[in-house]
Image (cartoon, rainbow, N blue to C red; front, side):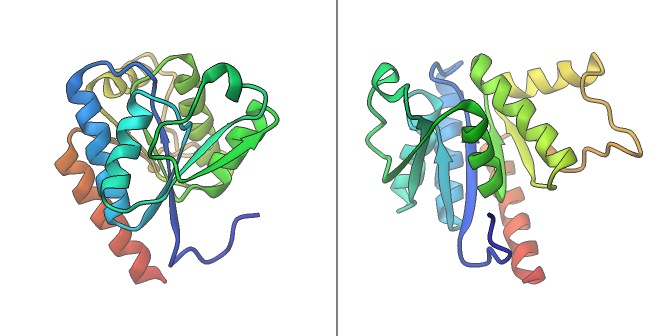
Length: 191
């Protein structure tokens, strides 16, 4: 069960793939991790390489805690966690894994990835729009392109009964840091 008051500990969930789309996106993931840890967020992610590792590297460089959330029966197959992981959670199935991520999230950040990341993105959007309004931030050229496509093709359609105010496209590391400051200032003012 999610604690009612999260003023001291905040958790950011990072969804991103194992194959970065570009060196620029890998650097952005690292800067995202630095910003999150600098703002006091604990990072939850898959624990593996690519964009997950870049984000974890950034968080670790600022003293952040990094928790890997994986499937209990896949850890052998998927390999070792990246070296920045400070804690790990092994869950029995994808549903439990997604519920763990989203149930603990104060913020979800999504970058490019494969079908697994796409699954995580759609779960986060559904969760934030129907279960609990958690901010979902999409960043990086590739993920922003996907968001544009989803809106253009009307897979994501805002209506009076389905608002999408929780969903934010973020174009750069500087914009991410600014939006994160706004979020943390608002949370502190509301506490």
